Image 1 (cartoon, one colour):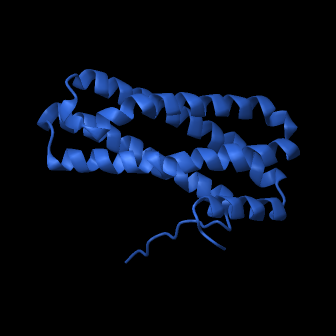
Image 2 (tube, rainbow, N blue to C red):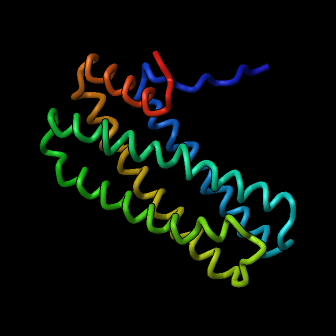
Length: 171
């Protein structure tokens, strides 16, 4: 019997951000499966549940994740690694692009029964997923390792505390 992995907590904020990337990828995969399901079986209870689950995730945890990075991680990282300014700026622009793609996708998920063009929905899903994949790859390979190396234990602790506060969690 394999025990479930325990998700990192606010005491490990960089690992928590990385774990969130894994959850984002799962939600993007759910969107792909939803598009395939709608194309093959149409609107079902399962499809509605998946659409609602994805909507809840990206409207809450996904939004908080961007805030964690933009309001907490990136400003501190810029103070210890100013050489990352261009990359961090680009990541912020990518956040805006993903938010724009979400604004287009979210209403379709809110009422999947009204989707008349499955190909257009699928295209929107693929764009959204592709934007997240390249973004998360860069954060996982460049930004999070740089933060781990450059940030002090005190800075990491403060980062985790701010992330917890955003969610109404007291440490």
